[in-house]
Amino acid sequence: MTIMASKIDNALTGLIAGHEGAEGLTACYTCGSCSSVCPVEKVVEEFDPRKIVHMVGLGLGAELISSDIIWACSQCQTCVPVCPQNVRCADVIKALRDEAVERGIVDEERRKELGMLAVVDAGKCVACLTCVRVCPFGAPRIIKEGYAFIDPDYCKACGICVEDCPAEAITLRQSLEAEKIGS
Image 1 (cartoon, one colour):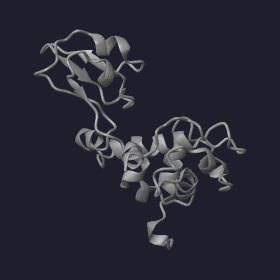
Image 2 (image 1 turned 60 degrees about the vertical axis):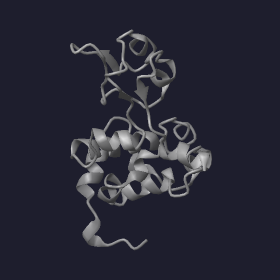
Image 3 (image 1 turned 180 degrees about the horizontal axis):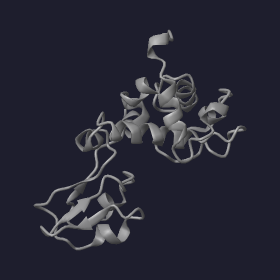
């Protein structure tokens, strides 16, 4: 990859570093500890947390924000305890995702397509509250129209609500990681 000065955006690097957990991103010296333990890196060839953090540190975050690769991270946090510099790769990636959403680069529909947001079929939902009870993140709620709604700000795409919904009214597309495992 050729780095062009015209693509460097150090302001974005500072903005990403301002997100909770991403403060130490510039301390990364690309040792690869994060990549060596990352389960997604093992199945999604293009995904490498070390490269992502390094690109942000170099001021190339804008290229990542518009890329689907940041959505491959499962947010398992396996990378966090192994970093000798206490860089929280998963939090840097989450900050990139948050910026993509905030800037309108990725909307709810795109998150659904990427397998990052569960979807309720209002016609099938019986408002039984099972999804509300089982979700550890508080994403589902019953709205006044009488069916469940998944709040995109809280959904972690874990699939618990999908598995436990007795009416089979909730779906979740396969993530990039799951697609690669299945192929």
